[in-house]
Image 1: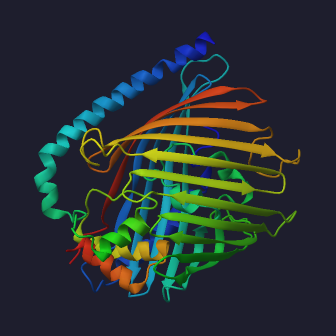
Image 2: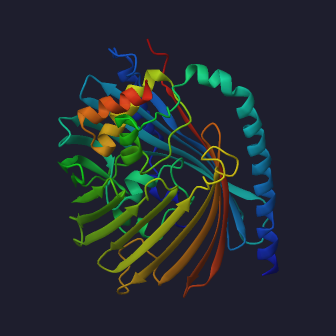
Length: 102
Length: 353
């Protein structure tokens, strides 16, 4: 039992190391944000809700959260991938593509 | 970490991966008419730890995914796993043993005929319940460990070799019904091993309520023909950062379920605030033996387990996963502590036009 407790004590150390790493990333994120936004297709926030946003929330976001950003060069490939996974219609595919490339 | 996402990794030879890379390299020679259709390279890189009954094991892992569209109707996609395991030496020795595995999770071609019919050919993930084909990637899973019943039909290793048809059967404003049906051939090939079997899944989704329910069926057509069935229910209340997911699976000799809830604390400044990035999790699961014939992947004794997790969603697609689980069974109760960090990457496979 003592050995188990001793081994478990390593977990907080690992967690602390991860938190330090996380803090570094978070700080880095603040500094790098402008250059990232320049090249990546940020998931847009459209008001009122567009068809593409609706498709994203109802179909894609059921399984995963949206990535922070990605190149416009692969937006069509992402949509194609989602069309297979979520059985999207061609109209949904176009709406999603417009949502990614407003 | 006896029931981890790594149980889904098909531990196959390096040649299998080489074959996939070669196939995808051929795609690189293709011309892509649209600048938006550049093949993508995505996936996750993680460093995970698991302390199980006092022993800490470390798992550096890379899970790359590549997807390449061809023309207007075709998509070729593949996912692989590169895993290193560093586990403490037994027998009172100090230090760690290490081993590594390389495996192809799937390699498939998709032909999209219409919304109603997509034909999948190749080595694909079996769509039994939802975890295997929808939640198992490390950049999607909330917990490092997969659910206990994910190993219910262990003979298939989670992948099939053959064909699958999938699509949307009915689409209305108030609901839609999706389906898939697959047939897998038996293959003892080290590169594309699979069991002979068939099955499918049908699910209904109510978009207004954000409610999904489905039924899965799987029949093993080799050796002792066994049936597996499952039910899943997912609910994501609209405009709430709460997700509830559940599955029930039953085999010939065992059954079990899991229920998972995750919540983003958006009330404190939205999803991207420091507090909104915190994601508390809870999962309850149980497995039950129907008899003592151990032809499935579940524990030989009834097992109960509660997982408590706290994830943190950092910027740049990085996520910290932490959890504590208490497992109760006749073979002994134990604690499982897990921590890890996962980075999801997503970029063009090469510079587009």
